[in-house]
Length: 340
Image (cartoon, rainbow, N blue to C red; front, side, top):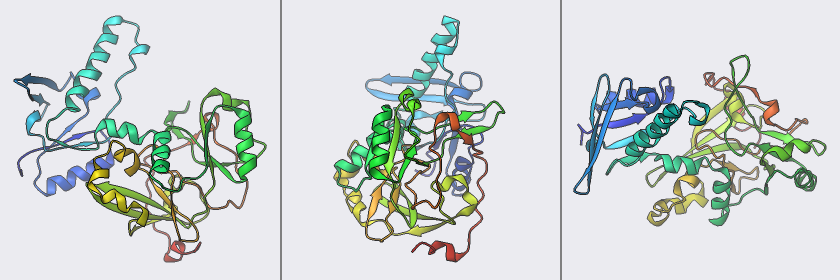
């Protein structure tokens, strides 16, 4: 087992994958890093076979030769997306793009006996915010009142009924502005006079605000739950917006998550959609509320009662975001208890 490789599928510049690769190297675990859209066919080649019902094959890169049947696990992070074939004029190019996407990815999705962290199909479920919310509600978790709508009147009515309401996009947002800077959409509160006709352009998520004392990020590894408490210095709705203001610390797994340890639940089709959801603890300390983000990696949660009005977020108001700004300056210890 010690000489069977781990395949890491991600783009160049993924600092999280770099840390994992460094740890694996330090433990003497062989690894192969691959970015299919960038590596094939220029610096990598693949042959996969199904002979007598057995899946085998190999991938050759500039520095590695990988036996597909020997891969022990796949760390599937953030590979470069394939080009959009609809944006290519030549039919031959469209053919190559589509065949490459389904051929290379199809083989990498089907490695026999490999442990995927996570399988791309499960990642897609984890990115489905509506599925996460519906799954959490079906399993009995407390879910804030939520509206997914493209009807302006329904949005206005929801905001009027619930008072303090937050807005979040249905799916993660990565935009490039005219200045070349990355932009995203942060969670925002919504004033009662703000829902307008632009809501009709696409679905939006509106959610009842849940007061909090901290955020909790829950990660599942096999049948083990690992919870991390995230304390923010100030009343920031979205802790990702300024990570120099957060403090992270280990936290006991919330009691409502006990069923996650059950083998029957772990095998369910909904496991990845739920396990990648973050959790918010209420101010009274008595319950945990499921507030899935739909991206499985970065969380956006209902904020504490805001001290000032903030405008709702929309794509036309996307704000600059530098994913490379990962400051980890820890606030003082008092910040962890300031809202208790």
